[in-house]
Image 1 (spheres, helix red, strand yellow):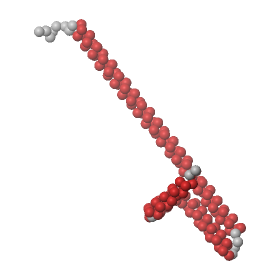
Image 2 (tube, one colour; image 1 turned 30 degrees about the vertical axis):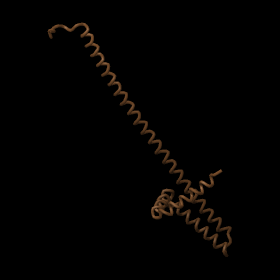
Image 3 (tube, helix red, strand yellow; image 1 turned 90 degrees about the vertical axis):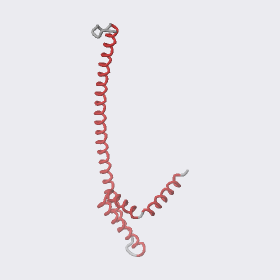
Image 4 (spheres, helix red, strand yellow; image 1 turned 135 degrees about the vertical axis):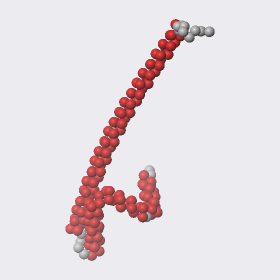
Amino acid sequence: MANPNTPKSKTEQAASDIKNKAQEVASSALDSAKDTASHLADRARDTASSVASQARDVASNVGQRAEEATTTVASGMRNLAGSLREHAPSGGVKGSASSAVANTLESGSRYLEQEGLSGMADDLTSLIRRNPIPAVLVGIGIGFLLARSTRS
């Protein structure tokens, strides 16, 4: 039986040294991997934040341009109504029809100016909620017409 107080053999000492060195290297590699993962997570978070900020800026810019286009369309509708009133006959069937069209154009231009695109979207959403079956049928009809018009 071996005496516990006897010194370790050279082989046992070398194996112990290798084991300790391997543990140190593994520990060092683990720390390095943790640091790298933390760094990559920080960079990913920064990049995601930057992309989100740019997306907000683009969405805001698109929204502003859409509102400007709505104002331009409303102004064009108002001008068309005025032009229609000037050049249309004042009496008879043509006069009453042109007056009705001009009134509708003016009413539509006021609606566009007051509500804008967001108000129109809200109104459309509530209309579809109140009338779901006709909305689905209109969607099917529009899809059918688009499919027929895109056929070769």
